[in-house]
Image 1: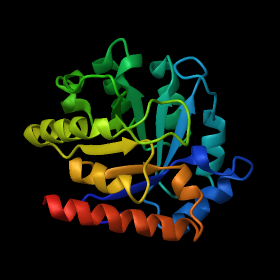
Image 2: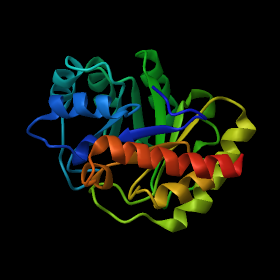
Image 3: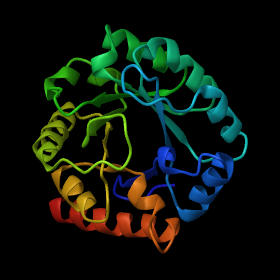
Length: 230
């Protein structure tokens, strides 16, 4: 499932009905989501605490929709194997939480999953310069991590563009993802800056016409901006 031109729409399970996560996964697949993101928070790296691997594994049994785990945790090396075993195809770790980022990414790939690096708003782009050969995705946070419903930070757009340039120079098929405050309006700006993968939580889940309409709107808006920059 892919929207074409490298365009990927990824609903966040943080905004889903937590009492019926399996049904939510099935509904998002039917609505046209390309994959879903599990926001994993430990109460230490970020203040909130969310799902563990057992919840993800239970939902894995009811859908074929690809899963990605965004590990907002202090010890990603300990957490990553559990979420791969639970059925996550992609594991994203925060550069700020990794003592040895190269080793962490190598470890994720050795488990058979794709590896991603997330950069908080303050984290420099050159943090990823020497691990791109081990990186399948770079996530530029367009909010500070830890809570849903935050407002998009337009100041991150030059950073998105800078990461896009780094990826293009590297030449490998590395995805560029954005997460935080993504709506039908802000997705245009993030896509114009160079992003191709878009996490949407609160806006998507609250869309008055439902999830399928929300995903279609996001996809159409992003496609326009991606087409304009091509």
